[in-house]
Length: 316
Length: 296
Image (tube, rainbow over all chains, first blue to last red; front, side, top):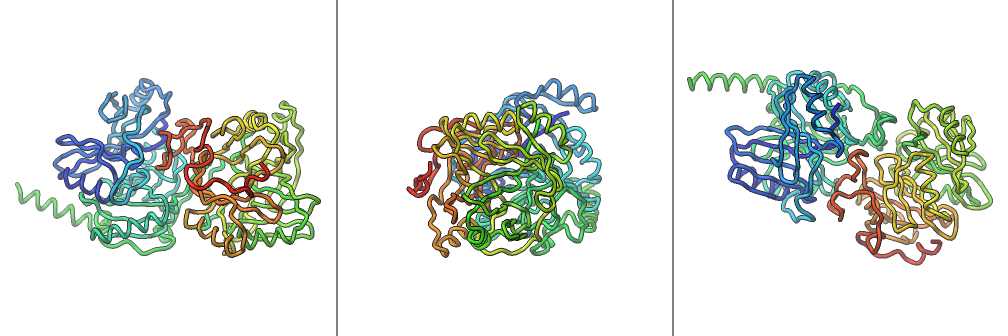
């Protein structure tokens, strides 16, 4: 089995590359590493590649990369995948600082890239905007979260950290409570992407910055149930939801099987479990604004799809 | 092999139980979960047991406990210890909520107890004082740090996170950069005990608690080298060094072998190593005062 240990970077297709670069460098606080005509690479202030942008007709999440241990045998992994009926390609030098990588698609069509060799792209970088410490997790809306979670557990060795009833699952590949999560939704697309901040003071600075830039915070600050992270959400230039978070639950030892105890836990100790909907959204904090729920409200999704169908019919 | 996964609590003998109890409840911000004539159990505000006080002739740290995996077999662990020449015994009900421990001594004479079953000893509650989140690590001054590290590595499965020169070693038993550390020194005994606070704002609150109570801060606030934790040190009524810290390095995956990257790291990525020179002591902040160094 393959075991990703850390999320590397996310690749987004965007309809407006300049606007997206402006957002990631001026608001998010990443640093531009390289810019080609139709492509850009952005790194965190620590110098780790975090986001790749590609110009395209539609804005969407295209790829996620994960680090595997240095001694991983890529040919063996490719054979294992092939045995599972998954086609993979070995690529070289397609990403700055990364040697070879093994690419394949997950069941929802996101390309997964595994790499073991990588290097920092910069050091002690100055930045504008928020300046997160790292890319933390990526949530995706899918028709059947159980099926996708099974794939991630069986093929990629992820572990379930929590469920909210049967519609939202949080999966970990390391100490962090979740690195990918899947929610049942009418539209199969990215739900949100999350970046880690240092502490609550850092998060307050982010809120002040949003106010200065007239960017609406559409949920938070709120302390979540599953993961117990304190979080704020906004929409980026491509209308995707972006989360900043701190204080995410840490499974410091898999065999002990509980998250490092914190004063805000209600369970003693806090173990992976199934949460009910009423207590899962937030332990404290406001409810999400309608703008946060836009695509994920089932009825709103239906309306949106009906509108699209009507528009497509009109175009014909 | 025996593999501790988390530090449980530290046992201290003290000549003045009342004074020590007042210190832990009013300044450190622990909860007195139980009190007998010659013994007191102290818990964090979450209710986890972290310190046990016993009346004794001299002030010293006599015991550390560690949690092992739920399926750890006590007979197997006892056999493994015997094979390493270490005598062990099973004790029952040493503290509330812990039905069984495997007890033995490490080479410096500190009692070690391993447990798998445990329960919270107090409800989640508000506290006075600093109110740390957990007991993080205990450092000992020993005759030979290398020998001690060898024992903790071979017998207890700890991993070396960093060395300063050949005299100060930091060892981990989970994602935290260090849970025990050993410094070669003239005196054998506890060097310091450290409690984790939530973040830098919480660390500042702890400084203000110490300030209000006229407890001198003998080192910090500063960012240390090995572990990169922000730290503040003071001395408790038994003259032991106590550290409050936040932002300790995390080895999130042993197979990757580097600490979760942070902007204040100078190595990229930051891996276990031998530190030398000025950064071995600190990344930024003032050097320690005489009152910190006095027993090194």
